Length: 307
Figure 1 (spheres, rainbow, N blue to C red):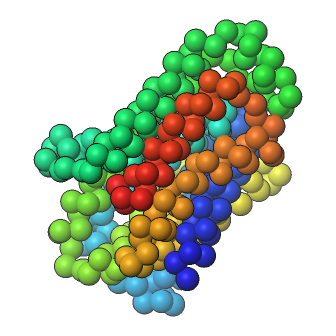
Figure 2: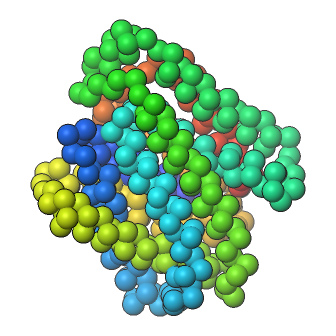
Figure 3: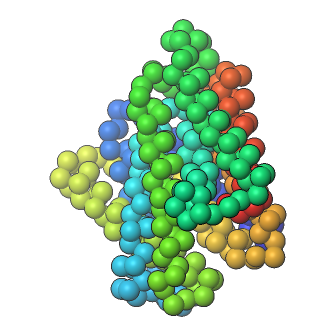
């Protein structure tokens, strides 16, 4: 069962990347990232209700309040990621965002004195090299070369500091959330499996609240419009995100097969790059793909060691 859950997480999270990109890439819709938060909040809120009222997952104010800082870091990181999809190709954004695992490992080494096998240190180096390389290649690419390779796609992206800053912001905030997540476990008197289920419900309910806040700001205060044709991809992406999160939790709960499920799931950004090439017609230079390959290899190696 662990194998199919891991595959489901890989496909759903890469599918979420794809449909989130479709839903957020229109630069004319300046609140598209907030509408994406609304969509994820609605779907996650419904799933949280199912988990609580049907599956009996424990949730209370103490769990919600304790997990709140972690939830907010994750949600803010995703909002930054959604906003970034307006300015840069998914092929570049996804590997940068998924470098957060390397950043968590670096934080653990610096603040907690953690030690890792040489292979993990090499993996961290590969991820950092790949991400930094992507930034350098993207920044140094001249406008004519950029226009030539983007000609086949439907969207053109000009050189912008936001294009790299927003995925990097996602990476930093997501890493902070993951790091904080490991600290919160000690504060709740739950087993690991109970913690994962309750923490996920707390995260989903907080996402629902964030979606309501975004709705009040974008739709009620700013009086922006919700157009069904424009919103449909966002809700498809939200469904993929929620199912992927559910599959991920139960895949890694099978600790006997964690060494196999973790690298499968961690490779989802490679699938995102593939979908962006097939469905979004994104085309990068060989330098981009080399840097992406380095980052993906590093991410998968860290997945083997569950970093």
